[in-house]
Image (tube, rainbow, N blue to C red; front, side, top):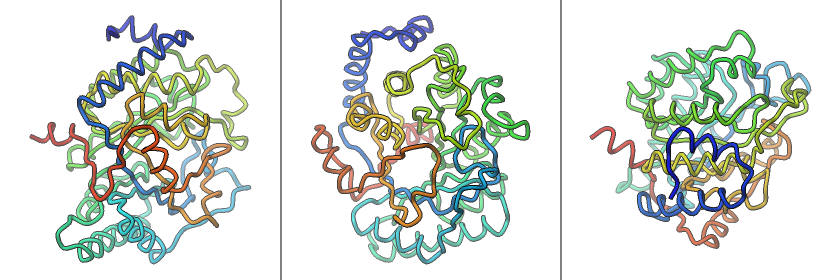
Length: 347
């Protein structure tokens, strides 16, 4: 049995012992099955634009990467992809892009969300239509509210690190951790199912940093976590910094497992980055407590330009479903798969 004291958590995160990792994953898998069952819910991911106003030092689509071909999917294509997901039984999607708080961009996104809701509810009058998650960065309270009113009900806003010093190290001076936190709290106030997360294995990151991230997730009472290993991108300045102390893959598995043990009823994503860094990433992520996967629905002629990190591994949704089943889990099709934590928190 893993004792979840601060000292023990830090030791678990710092150790290289494979036996410790195995014990932790086995404990988390039991906790996951007891509290959220064996279903794995799909979020069809539509990366609709790689234009970004930010210059995060780790990211391949940062504003100052002038060698990247930029794209923006049109409204018709986004809606068609969303409806295709609905027809295949992926009853939740995630619309993701680089960050833009331009009024015209947010107004267009609200129109897209409203049209997806309308069409999917008309297609099946007995359903609530498509569940819609957004991940488009820092916006104003009014913009978040506009998107909520249009029909979005989940929002993922990763902080990448809850430590102010480490946050400053991986972001330019114009970006502030406090602004990120204000946005997370605005999302919760409006009523969103709210998710966040961190990158794991960053240069300069320690086990103590990650322990504080876990405390932050609990203190903020989040409903969803999207965490993944840090994978460098050659066009990002952080790729030149080599003082990495933690193994990104095994430490991500530990963070997934510890998050499940500390927060039994939240939704946790087995990220595309985890699947990209190791062939067993999906299987091990699910065993470690994850219950969400995000098959990429972005068209093949543009998906390679949503280039957050090197060697991104794209798997067809059908392949993911086969792998989920082969791992002994049940694909959660034809349902939203809302986090139990959100329901319990709201009640």
